[in-house]
Structures are given as structure tokens and as C-alpha cells.
Length: 607
Image 1: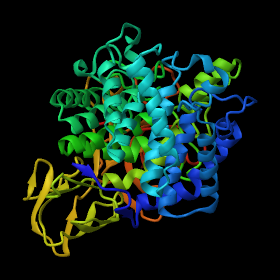
Image 2: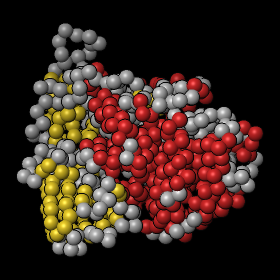
Image 3: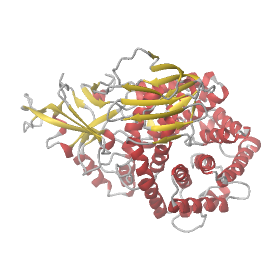
Image 4: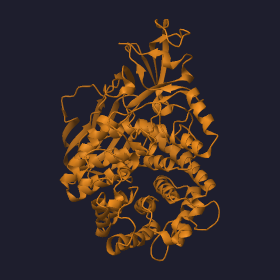
């Protein structure tokens, strides 16, 4: 299956429509301001003066340019266009004659180009390639594409032809998926060949034998998710795209095993992955701590990319289910409701006093401050990090959401509706309009015109839906025929549900989480005038659910719970007095948008 172009699908109303407005009006300018203040946009002018560039700053600028391309394609903005043009002009002007571009190495270490595997040269190149695809495809601007064509030629010459580089494959994957996107745009075989070279050689060289970068074994032998979670999902995305382009069944089978390893053993209920700050990586199965959860925002973004590509490769609805989980929870938690503050790390529990103590102690050394502020849970989003990969990653993903709504097979005979976002689709063989109240409710209205052609329409039934449908097959509702402005109404009937984790997740032993439709819920101290860690969840049948259609919070949930008073003793032979309290819950993505406070997702289960 394939996505439709962003030119063909437009969001028209509802939850993500509002998020896109905030993205254009607030998020993109805010990121530009922060990146300008820290010197990222100055760096691409390639001037040797403070603030000095960092090895990965080019990737931050490139993701901003990609985001700006999508936003400008939706609506022209004079200021954004000026920023965009200046940045591209700087890159074009400062590209080396041989095609190389990296604002760090060509200014500070020109004699060390392609000698440091883990210094992100090819990672930065990959993001530049993705920006070039976006600006060419959606703005008809080929300036960056011209830069990238020369840059690919140089990389190909050095890595494939001369083989005179100090490493064979990149330490941080990204260029592989970017090359394949360049190939899909231009149909130039060299781009696919170079992507294949990097994929095939990963894990073959002794100097590359590192599990953090998925280089421990060749990709066709990898069957579990290992190493740095962002690098991994970027690699798996590229592998899935390559498997689709080349009909590589071995890679497809491996990816299915890797995906199952993630969702059955290594993924948080929020769609977050990579549970530890030590290497930002996957650890052992079922190691999913809540307070110290790492769950980097970029890892959730990467999981969305991986799911999208696997859905295109296989058509299996589970990839739409997990994409939905990651999008509504793991990704959106990484950005404030106002759109201008961000989390790098996404814990599932916040103990405020404990965290404040850690942060206070961290002030004594620069190293510890960096470790705690950028590598451990914090109670409040911030405007920028020294490593700020996450803000522009969220920004570009929010713009790409329309691509995850509809998919079509290569013959345009099967149309798949995967995500329920109010939108319009216009293509050569089908027009469709979706009216969706997701995530406030499960009602979806679809109007479709197949322009005289008989097609099969598949509508994904969400994993959280208990509704019954006679036409359900393999997780999809199936409709066949010629659709002439046909109206289809579906109600997936979301309800408040308890979720139990695998008993091997020691952290969640005896606990439950609560969800409503695709939304994972949490409790914050701001809404509850008692200790939320003294609560047990029992019967939830009396819960009250309040959709907030005009609010970015989406919904409120209140329910009676058992609260156990402080007995006054650290340890006691009798439990504190039980009192029935009313607990208020909000979507996990909306936590930490008010004052700093406690938060939790998992609660002791009374039943």
C-alpha cells in the first residue's frame, strides 16, 4: 500500500486540525527563535566564530526546514518564508565544491571528514535529504534537492567507490530512510543503491560491532529490538521501505519479529520505547519503570514512522493500532498544549519532591545538571534542550498526520482508512470526506465517491473498540462496490477501561491503568486535593466522562476511588483508614501544563 500526498489530504476540523494550527502559528516560530538564539541558524553560514556549531546542529535546522515546507504548502507566511529562504540560501552558498556540507566539520575539522562514525555526519545529511524532498515535492523548490544530489554523489564516491572512509555505516541511522525517500521522488537508482549499501553492510565490520547502533549483527539476522531506540526505529523504517521496494521477504519477516518484540515486551502503554537513559535504549524484556522511564519523544516519533511503513508493507491493521497509540500519547506528551515547550523524556510517574531533590543536587556540577535536566524526568516542559532533536521532530510529524489517514494499494482497487481525523481526500480515483469526533467519541461519518470504479473499502476497527460489526474481517470493516457519494456511519463506542500489564512487568504488579478510546489517562496533583499515591482503583462503572470538544485537554474523567489515610507510621500492621474520594483524570498528553505536581498513570487495583 501507499500513502496519499499531503496535497491530496487536508485536515478540516477537530482535534488534529487544531494541533496543526498551533503548530504553524506557535511551534514552528518558537523553534526558529530558540534555534536562532543558540546559534543553529548562524552555524549554517559556516563562519568560525562563537557560538561554535555542534556536530548535530545541521539536523535540527533540516527538520525545521522540512516542517516549514509542509506549513508553507498549507498557507503562505511571509516571515516563515523569509527564514526558510535565508537558511536554504546559506546552505547552497556554503556547500563545498565536492558536494559535502556539514557546518561543523567543514569549519572546525575539515581534515577529519568521515573519520568519526558517531559524530552524525550522515545523520545530518539524511535530514537534509528529507528536507529537500519536502521542499521539492510541496513547494516546487529544488534548491535543496540540487545540494543533495551533489552531496549524494560525494558520499557514494567516498563510501562505495573509493572506500576511503574510516567507517562503513553511520553510527546514527537516518540517511538510509532519507535516501529511499529521495529515490521515491526522483527514481534515481543511485539513491536506492546507496541505501542498500548502508543496510547490507551494517553489522559486517568489526569496527562497527556495537549493539547501541544496531551493528552487532547483519540486519537480516536481527529479530529483536536492540540498542538506541531512535536509531533503531529509523533503521527499521528504512528496512521496511527497502523491503517494500525490493520485495525482500526475509527483511519483512525479521521486521515482524522485531515489531512483536517491541509491542509485547518493550513498549510503554503510551507507545513510548527505550526505557533507560543509559544509552537511550531498549533494555531487557519487560523492563518498563514508570518514574525513571526514558521514553524519548523522538523514539515515539520513530515508532510512528516504523508503523506507517509496516502498514504500507503488510496492510496489517495492528500497525495502525500502535501508530494511533504512539501518536495520541507518546508523541503529544512531548509538546505543551501551547505548542512552545517540550519534553525530551516522558515519565509515566512524577514524584515532585523526589525530582526536585534530584535537580537541586544536580546543580552542583555541570555534568550532573545535564544528566538530570536532559536525561532524567523533569516536572515541567522547557523551551529548548542542548540536544533539541525532539521539538522539530514533533513539528514535522504533526504536519505529516494527513498521510496516516488513508492508504491505497498499487492498483487503486483497495482503499484503507486507518486514522480517524476530520479531513478531505481528493485523488484521481476517489474523493472522500471524514467527519470524526475522535478522541472525544468514537463516531465517524464517511462520505465517499469512487468515480465509477468498483473498489474495496477497509475501515480499521481500533484495538480499544468493543463494538461488534457483521462485516469485520481481520480487524477491518469491509465494504465493496461502486461508491457514488455514499455515506457510511460508524460508532466505535469508546469506554473507560482498565488495562492490565503483563505480570512480568514487575513495576506494574497489582496495578491498572485507565484508558478511554486511544487516550491513556493519568492523575495529577493539580486536580486532586489528596495524595494520588494513596489511591486504589476499584469499580469504574460509576465514572463520569466529560468530553471537552473546545479544549485541548480533550476530556475529563472523574470516578470514585478508595483513598487510604496516612497512619502516621512508616510501617504499620494496620492499613490507614479507607475513605471514598473522587479522583479526576486527564489525558496523559496533557499533564504538566499547569503547575509542577505529582502525576501517575498506573494505580494499585482494589479488585
